[in-house]
Image (cartoon, rainbow, N blue to C red):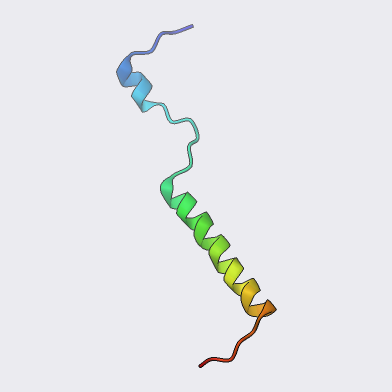
Length: 46
């Protein structure tokens, strides 16, 4: 087993999800919820 120094530990990236990916997933869910709501309860434009 190899001991790592602090500089080497800071460089390790373990497959984390970026903030942009999370924001994209939330935006996609919101969009699909709006589409489903529009199909399920269509209202006229006012």
